[in-house]
Image (tube, rainbow, N blue to C red; front, side):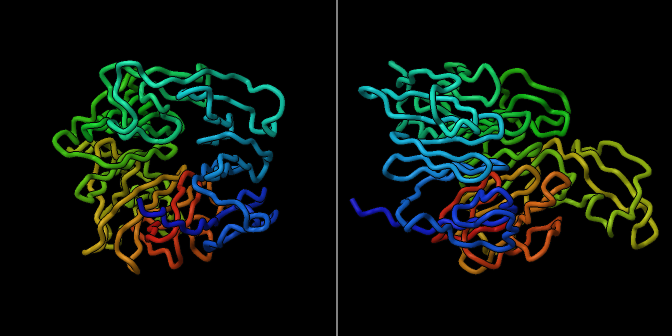
Length: 372
Protein backbone atom coordinates (compact mmCIF):
# COMPACT_ATOMS: atom_id res chain seq x y z
CA UNK A 1 0.00 0.00 0.00
CA UNK A 2 1.36 3.40 -0.94
CA UNK A 3 2.05 5.77 1.91
CA UNK A 4 -0.65 8.40 2.29
CA UNK A 5 0.37 11.73 0.86
CA UNK A 6 0.31 14.31 3.63
CA UNK A 7 -0.71 17.83 2.84
CA UNK A 8 -0.56 21.07 4.79
CA UNK A 9 -3.42 22.49 6.82
CA UNK A 10 -4.30 26.16 6.39
CA UNK A 11 -6.48 28.45 8.50
CA UNK A 12 -8.10 31.84 7.99
CA UNK A 13 -10.91 34.06 9.22
CA UNK A 14 -11.66 35.49 12.64
CA UNK A 15 -9.00 34.16 15.02
CA UNK A 16 -9.67 36.41 18.00
CA UNK A 17 -9.42 33.42 20.32
CA UNK A 18 -6.49 31.76 18.56
CA UNK A 19 -8.71 29.17 16.86
CA UNK A 20 -6.04 28.43 14.24
CA UNK A 21 -2.91 26.90 15.77
CA UNK A 22 -0.11 29.43 15.88
CA UNK A 23 -2.28 32.35 14.75
CA UNK A 24 -2.04 34.23 18.05
CA UNK A 25 -4.88 36.18 19.65
CA UNK A 26 -6.91 39.05 18.26
CA UNK A 27 -5.91 38.43 14.67
CA UNK A 28 -8.06 38.71 11.58
CA UNK A 29 -6.51 36.27 9.10
CA UNK A 30 -7.70 37.44 5.69
CA UNK A 31 -6.02 34.78 3.56
CA UNK A 32 -5.02 31.16 4.21
CA UNK A 33 -1.94 30.70 6.38
CA UNK A 34 -0.27 27.38 7.23
CA UNK A 35 -0.98 26.17 10.74
CA UNK A 36 2.03 26.52 12.99
CA UNK A 37 2.10 23.57 15.36
CA UNK A 38 4.41 23.52 18.40
CA UNK A 39 7.80 22.43 17.11
CA UNK A 40 6.09 21.28 13.93
CA UNK A 41 5.47 17.99 15.68
CA UNK A 42 1.68 17.61 15.32
CA UNK A 43 0.78 15.38 12.38
CA UNK A 44 -2.81 16.57 11.96
CA UNK A 45 -5.18 14.28 10.06
CA UNK A 46 -8.56 15.75 11.02
CA UNK A 47 -9.89 19.20 11.92
CA UNK A 48 -13.27 20.07 13.44
CA UNK A 49 -13.89 23.80 13.77
CA UNK A 50 -16.49 25.54 15.91
CA UNK A 51 -16.84 29.32 16.15
CA UNK A 52 -14.63 30.00 19.15
CA UNK A 53 -12.30 26.99 19.15
CA UNK A 54 -10.97 24.21 16.94
CA UNK A 55 -10.23 20.53 17.62
CA UNK A 56 -7.21 18.99 15.89
CA UNK A 57 -6.80 15.21 15.71
CA UNK A 58 -3.37 13.71 14.99
CA UNK A 59 -2.53 10.39 13.39
CA UNK A 60 -1.11 9.37 16.75
CA UNK A 61 -4.55 9.65 18.37
CA UNK A 62 -4.11 12.95 20.21
CA UNK A 63 -6.78 15.67 20.26
CA UNK A 64 -5.59 19.22 20.85
CA UNK A 65 -7.92 22.20 21.26
CA UNK A 66 -7.00 25.72 20.23
CA UNK A 67 -8.99 28.90 20.90
CA UNK A 68 -11.45 29.77 23.65
CA UNK A 69 -11.25 26.12 24.74
CA UNK A 70 -7.95 24.35 25.32
CA UNK A 71 -6.57 21.02 26.43
CA UNK A 72 -5.31 17.71 25.05
CA UNK A 73 -6.45 14.10 25.21
CA UNK A 74 -4.88 10.89 23.95
CA UNK A 75 -6.34 7.68 22.56
CA UNK A 76 -8.80 9.46 20.26
CA UNK A 77 -9.85 8.46 16.76
CA UNK A 78 -12.16 11.40 16.03
CA UNK A 79 -13.44 14.67 17.49
CA UNK A 80 -16.44 16.87 16.74
CA UNK A 81 -16.52 20.45 17.99
CA UNK A 82 -19.54 22.66 18.62
CA UNK A 83 -20.17 25.60 20.94
CA UNK A 84 -22.41 23.47 23.15
CA UNK A 85 -20.39 20.27 23.23
CA UNK A 86 -17.09 18.63 22.40
CA UNK A 87 -17.54 15.00 21.37
CA UNK A 88 -14.64 12.54 21.34
CA UNK A 89 -14.50 9.02 19.96
CA UNK A 90 -11.87 7.13 21.95
CA UNK A 91 -10.54 3.66 21.42
CA UNK A 92 -12.16 1.15 23.75
CA UNK A 93 -11.47 -2.46 24.67
CA UNK A 94 -11.60 -4.95 21.82
CA UNK A 95 -13.16 -3.72 18.60
CA UNK A 96 -15.40 -1.20 20.36
CA UNK A 97 -15.00 2.48 21.16
CA UNK A 98 -16.23 4.94 23.75
CA UNK A 99 -18.18 8.05 22.87
CA UNK A 100 -17.58 10.94 25.28
CA UNK A 101 -19.30 14.31 25.53
CA UNK A 102 -17.39 17.14 27.23
CA UNK A 103 -18.09 20.76 28.03
CA UNK A 104 -15.73 22.70 25.71
CA UNK A 105 -14.31 24.67 28.65
CA UNK A 106 -13.49 21.59 30.70
CA UNK A 107 -10.07 21.09 29.04
CA UNK A 108 -11.12 17.39 28.93
CA UNK A 109 -10.22 17.00 32.61
CA UNK A 110 -12.15 15.01 35.17
CA UNK A 111 -15.16 13.05 34.00
CA UNK A 112 -17.08 13.67 30.77
CA UNK A 113 -20.65 14.95 30.87
CA UNK A 114 -21.76 11.70 29.30
CA UNK A 115 -20.18 8.58 27.85
CA UNK A 116 -21.36 5.46 26.11
CA UNK A 117 -19.75 2.35 24.69
CA UNK A 118 -20.11 2.15 20.91
CA UNK A 119 -20.05 -1.21 19.16
CA UNK A 120 -20.41 -2.25 15.53
CA UNK A 121 -23.93 -3.44 14.73
CA UNK A 122 -24.00 -7.21 15.22
CA UNK A 123 -25.90 -7.92 12.01
CA UNK A 124 -25.80 -4.53 10.36
CA UNK A 125 -23.57 -3.30 7.55
CA UNK A 126 -19.94 -2.70 8.33
CA UNK A 127 -18.21 0.67 8.05
CA UNK A 128 -16.52 -0.47 4.83
CA UNK A 129 -19.79 -1.54 3.27
CA UNK A 130 -21.62 1.70 3.97
CA UNK A 131 -18.57 3.96 3.75
CA UNK A 132 -19.82 5.55 6.96
CA UNK A 133 -18.50 9.04 7.51
CA UNK A 134 -16.92 10.72 10.51
CA UNK A 135 -18.66 12.19 13.54
CA UNK A 136 -21.44 13.06 14.19
CA UNK A 137 -22.26 9.70 12.52
CA UNK A 138 -21.08 6.85 14.73
CA UNK A 139 -18.94 3.94 13.45
CA UNK A 140 -21.88 1.54 13.55
CA UNK A 141 -23.74 3.85 11.10
CA UNK A 142 -26.88 3.14 13.13
CA UNK A 143 -26.84 6.22 15.35
CA UNK A 144 -25.45 9.74 15.56
CA UNK A 145 -24.48 12.20 18.27
CA UNK A 146 -26.32 15.47 18.86
CA UNK A 147 -24.99 18.60 20.61
CA UNK A 148 -28.23 18.68 22.62
CA UNK A 149 -29.78 15.96 24.79
CA UNK A 150 -30.38 13.20 24.08
CA UNK A 151 -26.78 13.05 22.89
CA UNK A 152 -27.10 9.54 21.44
CA UNK A 153 -29.80 9.28 18.75
CA UNK A 154 -30.47 6.00 16.94
CA UNK A 155 -31.40 5.87 13.26
CA UNK A 156 -34.08 3.67 11.73
CA UNK A 157 -32.72 0.18 10.85
CA UNK A 158 -33.76 0.75 7.22
CA UNK A 159 -31.40 3.72 6.85
CA UNK A 160 -27.97 2.50 5.71
CA UNK A 161 -26.19 5.72 6.60
CA UNK A 162 -23.02 6.73 4.78
CA UNK A 163 -22.67 10.33 6.01
CA UNK A 164 -24.59 12.63 8.33
CA UNK A 165 -24.37 16.40 8.67
CA UNK A 166 -26.01 18.67 11.24
CA UNK A 167 -27.08 22.27 10.67
CA UNK A 168 -28.31 24.68 13.32
CA UNK A 169 -31.80 23.18 13.28
CA UNK A 170 -31.79 20.37 10.74
CA UNK A 171 -29.99 17.18 9.70
CA UNK A 172 -28.97 15.69 6.36
CA UNK A 173 -28.23 12.02 5.79
CA UNK A 174 -26.61 10.41 2.75
CA UNK A 175 -27.33 6.70 2.48
CA UNK A 176 -25.33 3.91 0.86
CA UNK A 177 -27.42 4.18 -2.33
CA UNK A 178 -26.62 7.88 -2.76
CA UNK A 179 -30.05 9.08 -1.63
CA UNK A 180 -30.49 12.13 0.61
CA UNK A 181 -32.79 12.36 3.64
CA UNK A 182 -33.52 15.45 5.73
CA UNK A 183 -35.37 16.24 8.94
CA UNK A 184 -35.68 18.91 11.62
CA UNK A 185 -36.86 22.51 11.32
CA UNK A 186 -37.78 23.72 7.84
CA UNK A 187 -38.73 27.37 8.27
CA UNK A 188 -35.89 28.50 6.00
CA UNK A 189 -36.45 25.84 3.34
CA UNK A 190 -33.34 23.96 4.50
CA UNK A 191 -35.03 20.54 4.24
CA UNK A 192 -35.56 20.80 0.47
CA UNK A 193 -39.09 19.37 0.39
CA UNK A 194 -40.69 22.46 -1.16
CA UNK A 195 -42.35 23.66 2.03
CA UNK A 196 -41.33 25.47 5.21
CA UNK A 197 -42.73 22.75 7.45
CA UNK A 198 -40.69 20.77 9.98
CA UNK A 199 -40.08 17.03 9.60
CA UNK A 200 -39.75 14.99 12.82
CA UNK A 201 -38.26 11.94 11.07
CA UNK A 202 -35.84 11.44 8.14
CA UNK A 203 -37.69 12.07 4.87
CA UNK A 204 -36.38 11.18 1.42
CA UNK A 205 -35.58 14.22 -0.72
CA UNK A 206 -37.85 13.37 -3.64
CA UNK A 207 -36.52 16.17 -5.87
CA UNK A 208 -33.18 14.34 -6.08
CA UNK A 209 -34.49 10.81 -6.60
CA UNK A 210 -32.70 9.05 -9.44
CA UNK A 211 -29.56 11.16 -8.91
CA UNK A 212 -26.79 9.47 -6.92
CA UNK A 213 -25.17 11.87 -4.47
CA UNK A 214 -21.58 11.60 -3.25
CA UNK A 215 -21.45 14.36 -0.60
CA UNK A 216 -23.81 16.33 1.63
CA UNK A 217 -23.15 19.42 3.75
CA UNK A 218 -25.33 21.42 6.14
CA UNK A 219 -24.89 25.11 6.89
CA UNK A 220 -26.70 26.98 9.62
CA UNK A 221 -29.95 27.09 7.66
CA UNK A 222 -29.02 25.92 4.17
CA UNK A 223 -28.00 22.63 2.57
CA UNK A 224 -25.74 21.46 -0.26
CA UNK A 225 -25.12 18.14 -1.94
CA UNK A 226 -22.75 16.96 -4.64
CA UNK A 227 -23.70 14.31 -7.19
CA UNK A 228 -21.40 11.53 -8.35
CA UNK A 229 -21.16 13.33 -11.71
CA UNK A 230 -19.89 16.55 -10.09
CA UNK A 231 -23.11 18.60 -10.06
CA UNK A 232 -23.93 20.77 -7.04
CA UNK A 233 -27.45 21.20 -5.69
CA UNK A 234 -28.17 23.85 -3.07
CA UNK A 235 -31.24 25.02 -1.15
CA UNK A 236 -32.47 26.76 1.99
CA UNK A 237 -31.89 30.26 3.35
CA UNK A 238 -30.21 32.79 1.04
CA UNK A 239 -30.12 35.79 3.37
CA UNK A 240 -26.36 36.24 2.87
CA UNK A 241 -26.11 34.95 -0.69
CA UNK A 242 -24.88 31.54 0.48
CA UNK A 243 -26.89 29.89 -2.31
CA UNK A 244 -25.25 32.04 -5.02
CA UNK A 245 -28.69 33.47 -5.82
CA UNK A 246 -29.70 37.18 -5.85
CA UNK A 247 -30.23 38.45 -2.32
CA UNK A 248 -31.37 41.73 -0.81
CA UNK A 249 -28.51 42.02 1.68
CA UNK A 250 -25.99 42.34 -1.18
CA UNK A 251 -27.98 44.78 -3.31
CA UNK A 252 -26.19 48.15 -3.44
CA UNK A 253 -25.45 48.58 0.25
CA UNK A 254 -28.96 47.54 1.22
CA UNK A 255 -30.72 50.39 -0.63
CA UNK A 256 -33.24 48.08 -2.28
CA UNK A 257 -36.43 47.88 -0.23
CA UNK A 258 -38.74 44.89 -0.36
CA UNK A 259 -42.30 45.70 -1.43
CA UNK A 260 -43.83 42.31 -2.18
CA UNK A 261 -43.12 38.65 -1.74
CA UNK A 262 -44.52 35.30 -2.75
CA UNK A 263 -43.70 31.79 -3.89
CA UNK A 264 -42.75 31.13 -7.50
CA UNK A 265 -43.85 27.99 -9.36
CA UNK A 266 -40.68 26.18 -8.27
CA UNK A 267 -41.42 26.98 -4.63
CA UNK A 268 -38.74 29.65 -4.14
CA UNK A 269 -39.69 32.69 -2.08
CA UNK A 270 -39.06 35.69 -4.33
CA UNK A 271 -39.24 39.22 -2.99
CA UNK A 272 -39.19 42.31 -5.14
CA UNK A 273 -37.49 45.59 -4.44
CA UNK A 274 -37.92 49.03 -5.96
CA UNK A 275 -34.48 49.67 -7.43
CA UNK A 276 -34.16 47.53 -10.55
CA UNK A 277 -31.89 48.80 -13.33
CA UNK A 278 -34.72 48.98 -15.89
CA UNK A 279 -37.12 50.61 -13.46
CA UNK A 280 -38.95 47.35 -12.77
CA UNK A 281 -38.91 45.76 -9.30
CA UNK A 282 -35.67 43.81 -8.88
CA UNK A 283 -36.26 40.22 -7.68
CA UNK A 284 -34.19 38.53 -5.05
CA UNK A 285 -34.53 35.10 -3.48
CA UNK A 286 -34.76 34.86 0.30
CA UNK A 287 -35.64 31.17 0.56
CA UNK A 288 -35.11 28.32 -1.92
CA UNK A 289 -37.10 25.34 -0.58
CA UNK A 290 -36.25 23.03 -3.52
CA UNK A 291 -32.75 21.94 -4.60
CA UNK A 292 -31.36 24.30 -7.25
CA UNK A 293 -28.49 23.40 -9.60
CA UNK A 294 -25.44 25.60 -8.99
CA UNK A 295 -23.45 26.55 -12.08
CA UNK A 296 -19.66 26.67 -11.87
CA UNK A 297 -17.33 27.81 -14.63
CA UNK A 298 -17.02 25.50 -17.64
CA UNK A 299 -14.47 22.77 -17.07
CA UNK A 300 -14.65 22.96 -13.28
CA UNK A 301 -15.61 19.64 -11.69
CA UNK A 302 -16.64 19.74 -8.05
CA UNK A 303 -15.28 16.95 -5.85
CA UNK A 304 -16.25 18.14 -2.35
CA UNK A 305 -18.57 20.65 -0.71
CA UNK A 306 -18.72 22.23 2.73
CA UNK A 307 -20.77 24.86 4.54
CA UNK A 308 -20.18 27.45 7.22
CA UNK A 309 -23.08 29.01 9.04
CA UNK A 310 -23.81 31.41 6.16
CA UNK A 311 -21.37 30.56 3.41
CA UNK A 312 -20.59 27.67 1.08
CA UNK A 313 -17.29 26.29 -0.19
CA UNK A 314 -16.56 23.94 -3.08
CA UNK A 315 -13.42 21.92 -3.80
CA UNK A 316 -12.74 21.24 -7.49
CA UNK A 317 -10.27 19.06 -9.32
CA UNK A 318 -9.15 21.85 -11.63
CA UNK A 319 -5.98 23.59 -10.54
CA UNK A 320 -6.05 27.36 -10.80
CA UNK A 321 -9.79 27.79 -11.38
CA UNK A 322 -11.25 28.22 -7.93
CA UNK A 323 -14.91 29.02 -7.48
CA UNK A 324 -17.78 28.57 -5.11
CA UNK A 325 -20.37 30.54 -3.21
CA UNK A 326 -19.34 32.08 0.03
CA UNK A 327 -20.77 34.90 2.00
CA UNK A 328 -20.18 35.73 5.65
CA UNK A 329 -23.59 36.74 6.90
CA UNK A 330 -24.69 39.09 9.62
CA UNK A 331 -23.65 36.55 12.21
CA UNK A 332 -20.28 35.95 10.54
CA UNK A 333 -19.19 39.41 9.51
CA UNK A 334 -16.24 39.42 11.92
CA UNK A 335 -14.70 36.17 10.77
CA UNK A 336 -13.15 37.46 7.56
CA UNK A 337 -14.37 34.49 5.57
CA UNK A 338 -14.30 33.68 2.82
CA UNK A 339 -10.67 34.25 2.06
CA UNK A 340 -10.88 37.73 0.75
CA UNK A 341 -8.78 40.74 1.71
CA UNK A 342 -11.83 42.41 3.22
CA UNK A 343 -15.04 41.53 5.03
CA UNK A 344 -17.16 41.33 1.89
CA UNK A 345 -20.07 39.24 0.72
CA UNK A 346 -20.40 37.54 -2.65
CA UNK A 347 -23.64 36.36 -4.25
CA UNK A 348 -21.92 34.38 -7.01
CA UNK A 349 -19.02 31.88 -7.06
CA UNK A 350 -15.85 33.80 -6.25
CA UNK A 351 -12.22 32.69 -6.70
CA UNK A 352 -9.97 31.95 -3.75
CA UNK A 353 -6.46 33.09 -4.48
CA UNK A 354 -4.44 30.73 -2.29
CA UNK A 355 -4.25 27.10 -1.27
CA UNK A 356 -6.69 24.92 0.60
CA UNK A 357 -8.00 25.89 3.98
CA UNK A 358 -10.49 25.16 6.70
CA UNK A 359 -13.04 27.66 7.95
CA UNK A 360 -16.20 27.32 9.99
CA UNK A 361 -17.22 23.72 9.26
CA UNK A 362 -14.82 23.29 6.34
CA UNK A 363 -11.82 21.05 6.94
CA UNK A 364 -9.82 20.14 3.86
CA UNK A 365 -6.14 19.53 3.27
CA UNK A 366 -4.03 21.04 0.53
CA UNK A 367 -2.99 19.24 -2.67
CA UNK A 368 -6.33 20.14 -4.28
CA UNK A 369 -8.30 23.34 -4.84
CA UNK A 370 -10.83 25.15 -2.71
CA UNK A 371 -13.56 27.38 -4.06
CA UNK A 372 -15.47 29.77 -1.86
